[in-house]
Image (tube, rainbow, N blue to C red; front, side, top):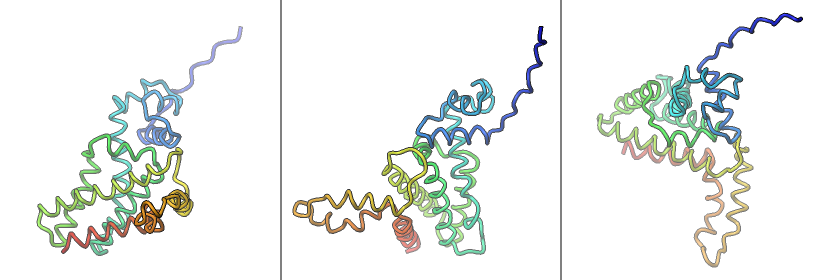
Length: 220
């Protein structure tokens, strides 16, 4: 009789590994469920519950990671002008979410009140106050910027139906242009005339155009 082998060592998981698995599921068009995450990393669901009591906790942690990871780079460089720092933050948030379009909707499905996002909010408030805004206007401006950034990204991501990272920007513009070219000019003359601009609504150029107009207004 062949002796039974000893069971192998229990796998040690980290929260980051589980969040990586959740992002992979979302990128594939799936759901970041506890069972799905467990299957992805090859463990029993109970192992995931050690870190996350339920799906809402997973979503909260993903929001923390996706937004908190942008609290670095150009935004953290205090030697740069305040506008450049906000632009850097907005571009980093967009890059993080465009890389994981399936996670974009999560930002609208849970509160953004974790420690990393709260710290990011605190630094943004401080930056705007240092730029000359009073505390109330700084708070309102912070909310306005968040709404613009997340709303713009949500619309950009919603433009694509296939799971996974978004296609190159030029390819998406070309597809949008082909769709909008079907607008009958005799019925919708203004929309037809605006097709070249409308096709580029999902570009970095448009994103920064809107952001800079908001920053102009904040300091006017």
